[in-house]
Image (cartoon, rainbow, N blue to C red; front, side):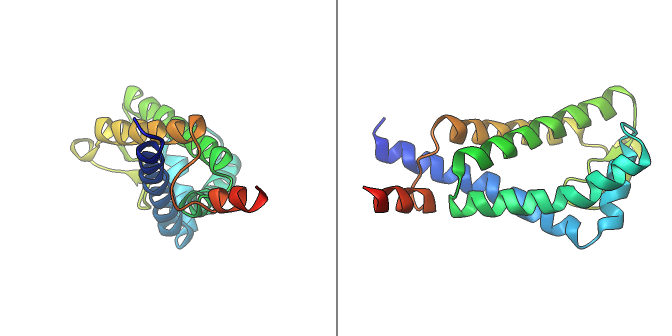
Length: 156
């Protein structure tokens, strides 16, 4: 495959992961109480840590998403994005195996739902796909229309 095609694949991976993180963070940052409640619903950590995660996670998602969309610090931001997706997969899988009936809270509105309203497999597959996009960028951070590329050209 030509380097230009690989750069285009990287652009798509960068924009998909970046936009998803931006949207997820933006929807949660407007309702931090809901974000905290979504973390609490997983029953994995105590309330104080859940509160900290619920308040800081949206900010981290927005920051990482913005860096990815811009193509700035691409490898590092993709690594953080990938790690977030893997943590989300683990959390969702944990809720599923423990028989919890919750919405993942990935895009706000998390918390308890009727058991027939859970979508664990769909959510896990989505987050694995996003993690793969992030891994692509960790392995090959050079993409089209990236600030990193412009900065690299400016140094040569």
